[in-house]
Image 1 (spheres, rainbow, N blue to C red):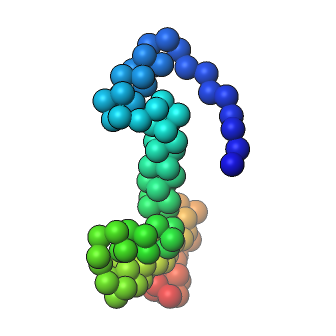
Image 2 (cartoon, helix red, strand yellow):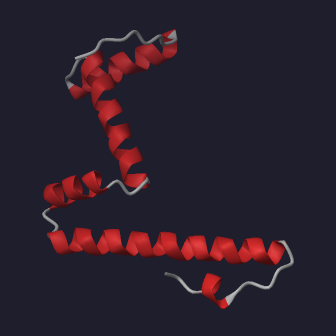
Length: 104
């Protein structure tokens, strides 16, 4: 376990104390939980598969749903990359090839 020092202004510290008290936890626990929440949010936004599995377990979703979501996300990335390539060609005044227009 690691320890660190975080500096807060008086107003923010006061808000943290109030929220932690309302939640029934210490300020340190409140901050720790906020960090975990932010990490999960960031992982979900970038499509981290570990987050998907954890979400599936937490929500009772089946593995096929997770696999399908991952597949759809990959297809979206492929289509986006192909679209960006075509746009680059168009901006450069080139005629895009048929191969660059087809997702792989």
